[in-house]
Image (cartoon, rainbow, N blue to C red; front, side):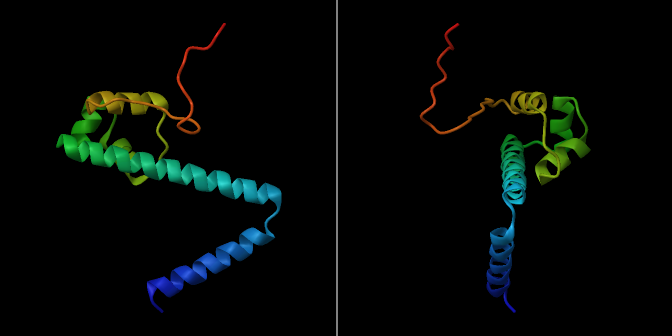
Amino acid sequence: MDSTQEMTEYEAVKESLLAEASPVELQAYQRARDAALVRTNIAEMIYVLRQRAGLSQAQLAQRVGTSQTVISSLESGSRMPQLTTLMKIAEALGTSFEICLGDDSYSSTPMAS
């Protein structure tokens, strides 16, 4: 069995299970999937930016004020970083830190009081 056939079978099983899921189970699945995607995207960004900066995990950890183990777990996606940690990482890597919620049509204009 090749990987394409395995993936097709996996997708079929997944779709079957999701079709049978209750609304609560479906919502829980979607939340877990979304959280995993966020962790994966953050992990990739940290890894790529660290590589571009020519730093080891230990060097980045020292700049951030954490351990190499924490940087490793962030880069593997097994740990969701706190916002303050992301801000420190961005500063240590000499890059900006931005958060985007929603679509691109949102404008960050001051809120009226």
